[in-house]
Amino acid sequence: MSTAVENISTGVEFEALDSALESQMILSMGPQHPSTHGVLRLDLRLDGELIVKAIPDIGYLHTGMEKLFEYKKYQQGIVITDRMDYLNPLGNNLAYVMAGEKLLQLEIPERAQVIRVLFCELQRIASHLVWLGTHALDIGAMSPFFYCFRHREKILNLIEAASGGRMTPSYFRIGGLMMDLPAGFDRRCRQFLDDFPEAMQTFESLLTGNTLWQSRTEGIGIISAEDAINWGLTGPCLRGSGVNIDVRRANPYCGYETYDFEVPTQPDGDVWSRFKVRMREMAESHKICRQALERLRPGPIKADAPKVVLPDRDDMRKHMDSLIHHFLIVAEGFNVPPGEVYMPIEASKGELGVYMRSNGGPKPDRVHFRGPSFVNLQALPVMSEGEMVADVVAIIGSLDIVLGEIDR
Amino acid sequence: MADTTALLEFANKLKAKNAAWVAEVIDALGEVSIVIPRETIVDVCIELKDEHQFDLLADLCGADRGPEEDPRFVVNYHLFSTKHFGRLRLKVRVGEDDAKIHTVSHIWRTADWHERETYDLFGIVFENHPDLRRILLPSDFDGYALRKDYPLRGYEPYSMN
Image (cartoon, rainbow over all chains, first blue to last red; front, side, top):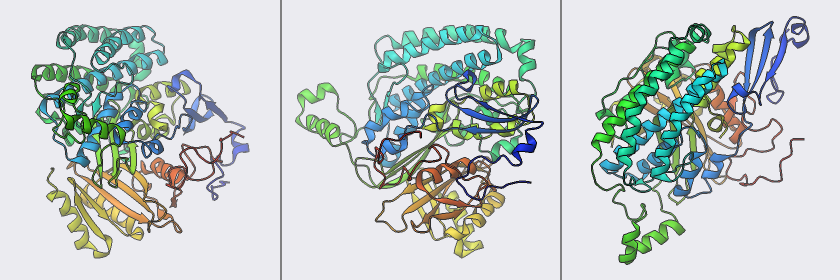
């Protein structure tokens, strides 16, 4: 019966298509379906409303970013990373610049590290807020969306105050930060952190205790811990299956080992577990933000590497060598010693790894992004087969995918 | 720089088990890479997964060293352990004329899409892969976009027909 694919270019295998269609239906869901969070297409083979087989089809948003990196200097590559996972641009910046810093073996000053942690955690909250709003919207709860976006807006304002960009900050640079925090940032950030616990309570009261919400999410899209590891899931999706793995704990960076926070896990591996994990993660990120703010001390924000890091404007007016360095970095870029690194960080969606390979010049030889969304989406068929069509919407929401990162 | 003694130990254990498995060990920038011959990839991966708890394949990616290099391509496997948190890189060098390597998608299911991506962008064929199709680019796309000799803007405007 089965016509197995022998020629690799023949396309999707629907064995015994004709006979199956007597009782089954093939539904192409997307790429414009609102619940697919971008341009994802699912080939669903249905028996009534039950999913027999689900095949994700991606690539609609492919823009050749990994190719583009090879034609841009290291510092120019940072702006490309913003556009991958556009809900977590600072996480992408961080992974990219830390890969470059590892190749250059730069020491990053304490203040820059603390600011990086602070912003990454703010960005994680912002990313989770978008997830929460859209996930609830997909399932049919409209009001959380407005509350979530209202509070996300406050975080975007903070990011804009520091970097000048809301969605595309490019705030982290190889060797430190673009610039120091503006005056009054501390007060504004504290104000947000003071208000946030109350907002969390609103989200909890809107959804967590809601019977409809529970019945739509509990026991749906189950993946076991063993399967989750085998399929390479990371981040909240893996911790929702009871595996306590967080890159911030397993392979700490930016001094995360010195912060006091918990890594929430849930045992069941269903949509509800992933929901609970992300809700608790927001509270933990809030905790880390507070600790980071307490640690902010005046100090340098750029590494002591004049050939890599742009000099201060003031120095350029007074010192000839600063002016020369500035000209050389901007016009020709800086050379990075040959070598290769893999830099993993805990982004809001899971492990974001950057493989960077240099052959000595001012442009990278190869940059590869291991996007957590790409890997997590791959497990969608495992979670959704045997479920109803309406549950696929809930499962996609619980994976928290961003197609910009998947297709790159 | 991170301490790599524990990771080098895995390389030594592999070498002790079968000397043919390890062609070269690179210890640089706090990371350990093991270069292995192409034929041994499945055996080495099974050994690392079953005996040394590298149960999560974090990433698999190809790299083109340029048309003048021989062997031209490198396939990198980034392994991670959820038990002891170690990270290890396996490198397999593949020539242009015979750009083939056995799949590891039966060892870690997550390798499936990574291998499809590498096939799509570099033209490296993963033998015995369950469903080796292009994944990011359209199925009728001509050429392999991430190869160094493929121009940045392609050969001609691509049309969906």
